[in-house]
Image 1 (tube, rainbow, N blue to C red):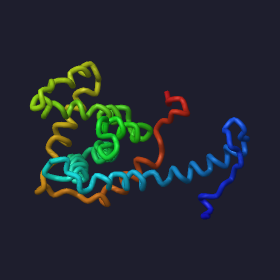
Image 2 (cartoon, rainbow, N blue to C red; image 1 turned 30 degrees about the horizontal axis):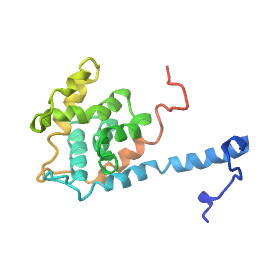
Image 3 (cartoon, rainbow, N blue to C red; image 1 turned 120 degrees about the vertical axis):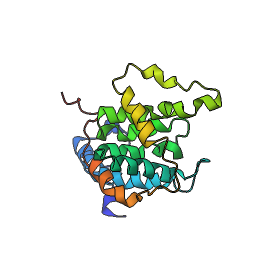
Amino acid sequence: MPDDDAIDTQFTRMQDATREDYQAIAKHAMAFGKGLPDRVLAHLELLRGDSGGYAVDRLTHSLQSATRALRDERDEEYVVCALLHDMGDSIATANHADLAAVVLEPYVSEKNHWIVKHHAIFQGYYFFHHLGLDRNMRDRYKDSEHWKDCVEFCGRFDQNCFDPAYDTLALDDFAPMVERVFRTPKRSIYLPDPA
């Protein structure tokens, strides 16, 4: 068994663990956390090959979104959010935006998190009416300070990213950005928010 998989504790119930046990576990958690960017990129690869009926597969859609955001000179965090906004399509088909938002939340600004979390209902503006739904469902969030930001994201970097002829960058082009954004959490559920 490799060292990083070594068992350092013997308890079978968390309530029986010691300080030393949890320090050993924290050490492993820190090492495991460093691999998060690679796991996120591997998960994104699951979108390759499935078009969902669109003219490009889901991975190409995500890459086009990020490529357009990069070429529009958005900051790196925004570009990574554009890249990952639909990452939940593979295993959270009924709430893909929520999955992506949860993954990104500790690492991005509150605004970017809000955009990713709500983009699916805002994207509905472009097609809900064709399915007998209210295309203006997004208006339930009209009072949010990020409403216009989400409208802009969907208009500029989501609804128009299904073009097989678009000069789209490769996933490897974005890997360093993903690494940097996921390097250090900006907030944690375990720690108080910075004031």
